[in-house]
Amino acid sequence: MASQGNSVKRIVAYFSMEIALENAMPSYSGGLGVLAGDTIRAAADLRLPMVAISLLYRKGFFTQRLAEDGSQTEDPVEWRVDDFLQEEPVRTHVSIEDRRVDLRCWRYSVKGVRGFEVPVYFLDADLPTNADAHRNLTGSLYGGDSYYRLCQEVVLGIGGVRMLRALGYNDLTHYHMNEGHAALLSLELLEDEAKRAGRTAVRGEDIEKVRSKCVFTTHTPVPAGHDRFPMEFLTRVFPKQTGFLDMKDAASVDLMKRVLQAQQDFPGLEEAARQGATLNMTQLALGLSTYVNGVAKVHGETSRQMFPEVPIEAITNGVHAGTWTSPAFQQLFDRYIPSWREDNYSLRGALGLPAEEVWAAHLIAKHELLETVREKTGLNFDPEVFTIGFARRATGYKRADLILSDLDRLRQIAKNAGRFQIIYAGKAHPNDGGGKDIIRRIYHAKKALKKSVPVVFLDNYNLDLGGKITSGVDLWLNTPQFPLEASGTSGMKSALNGVPSLSILDGWWVEGHIEGVTGWSIGEARRSVAGGAPTDNKSEAESLYYKLESVILPMYYNERNKFLEVMQHAIAINGSFFNTQRMVQQYITDAYLR
Ligand SMILES: *Cc1c(COP(=O)(O)O)cnc(C)c1O
Picture 1 (cartoon, rainbow, N blue to C red):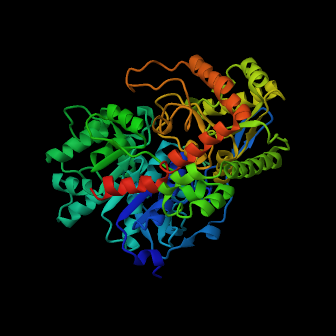
Picture 2: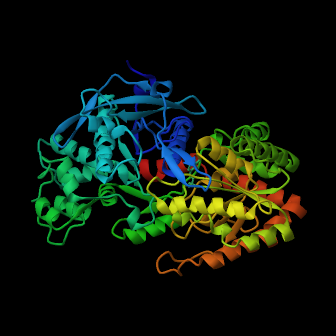
Picture 3: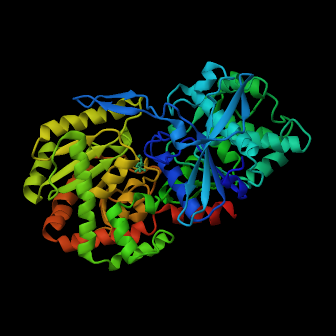
């Protein structure tokens, strides 16, 4: 069965541990997956001959359950794979601990604005020929221990390359690793090159060939965030693989030293294992890529400081405009800027939209959000009241509770400058105790603030809810601890819907912020990533309160026309640029056509 996608010559293979495509498909946990989905949508719009590959998670990420006090527990997600995906007849396999793990895959087709399709394949190990433990390898996303995770990466990287070959994609010239999780694909490509040269051991010339094909996007601004595994795991997964790289070949030894972060006098794999070496997936990806990028300019700089030995560039993330624009704004753009879907740059024309129609579209989105609040919680939020949104993965550095640092101050601001309300959403990773504490603190503050500042926390943050919150609030709040926000994309979704940001100057906002024009900053711009002043929560909270009380609320309530200008600038200046159409075009010119 030759499906339509296979008949088109594909040159770029995009590998990602998670890809968000549809709300009811639990194939993602957060930002990385949403970005992957938006990247593929833009590739389809641009008719880029791409194919994408990920894992099938039958149990998904999780369903979030929140108790009265905000304590989070997790339930598995039930979904019917064949409601969404079509099984492909081909099979391939990988080897784990000397046991054969058979793989099949399921196809999803992403259709672009001009009808071009990009196929997405989800690898599936749940086959009766596999051992029970292996059948579960494509069970849950971020669900198991570190060893389980490495095995999933074997399936994605090595299984992925083999599956694409089995599907007949023989023209691939570029392998794009979306984060280090996919780095093992390079080992399969190395083995291919050695085999093609009639060798079993890999040498420098193979490394060069593989390097010319690989592109790596890093998303993590802290060393601790990078995937790392003990050497012992590696020898457990691949018991026969020692000697895979030719230890008499200088380039091979260099690569091994770097990837294993072993001592200067690198003695070989067994000795490295005894020395307690670790396999660093980021180093593997860095060592075998011709082009490496961070996901915002400031993140590129952070990455260069972490990995000074390689050139690292930056391509700032975007969001898919057609996906993240609310229905009301889609209609408005269709009417006044008809080319916006094929040509996101034309959104700069938003400056010429009639302000009252922008306001009307915004109110429709706001009503839809407040209706969702009512359905989910029974609470009636007032559409006349200034509404702040904050929806992110609940984790320490994002500081969802920064705005809640001083509740008396919040009550005062509401009294002096005008009423406001806050809408929250976000899941904490099941093992992130600090993230779960933050949700409980929000619940606590919500009770303490009662009616003076209404606060609501919506459970089960997903694509649908993400769209509603980012488009339906009056202000997008973002308070990451600098420089830990690699990019952040929710504020870009808001911008497309005319919702300005109030944010720490980190990630994309360093580029998107023009004070009082596209939104507002919290605190000052930091010049240097390394050796910068430590984060001062108190002064940042103070800056947030000041902007809210003295600038934003007065403008919203007393100078609506000025507020509307900011809204239109958000669309015209930021919506027209921080989208995946521009982003994928940069990948094409900077990475794929290099
Ligand atoms: C947009 C989105 C994200 C990513 O948001 P960031 O601001 O990049 O952290 C995560 N989850 C959902 C459901 C989203 O819609």
